[in-house]
Image (cartoon, rainbow, N blue to C red):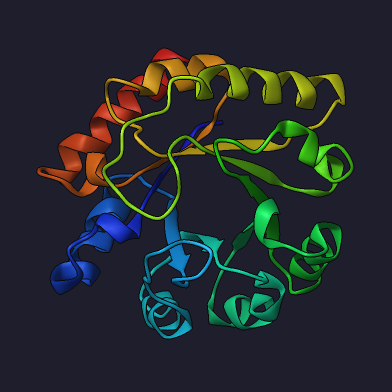
Length: 219
C-alpha cells in the first residue's frame, strides 16, 4: 500500500481550498500538515484553527506532523481539530511512550518521527506501539532541501526491523522527495511519501500522476 501525502506547507494559501480539492480529485487520500512552533524548529507554520477550518470541507486523511517541543501539551487539541494521525518527534518528547499512548487515547493513529542524525535505536521499545515511523530525509524546518543520500540505508534498516518483528508499521519519508528520488525510497521500503513543492509546484494533477506512476512500478 502506497500513499502520497502532499505537504500543505507548500500549497498556495491564497488558493488553499481550491488546491486541496484538486489533490483530492486526483486520487490523493492523505494530506501532510506540518505544525512548527519556532522552538523545536526555527520556522513557525500554523496550528489548530487552520486545521479546524479545512477539516470542515475536506475528506482527506489528516496526517499531522508536530515539529514542536513537548508535543504532549497539544495532542488533545489537534485531535479535536480533526487530525487522523499525529506524529511526534522522538527528540521533542520527554516521555515518548506516554505521548504515543496519549495520541491513541485521543482517538488518532500515532507516529514517531526521527531527524536524519537520530539513530533507529530510539525506536527499540516503542516500535510495536506506533502505526507509522516518519524518517526525515532532510533536516526539519524548511522546504526545498535536497534529499540526504544516507537516508536510503536508514529506510532499509527500518524496514528490516519492522519485518523482523512481524509488524505492519508504515514507513513515511519526508524531505527532498521528487521524481528523481522517489524510486530509491520506494525500493528501500518506504510506503507513505511526503512531497511538497514536487506536488504543488506547477501542474498539480500532472505532478500527482508522476508519483502514482512510480507507485505502480513498485506494486
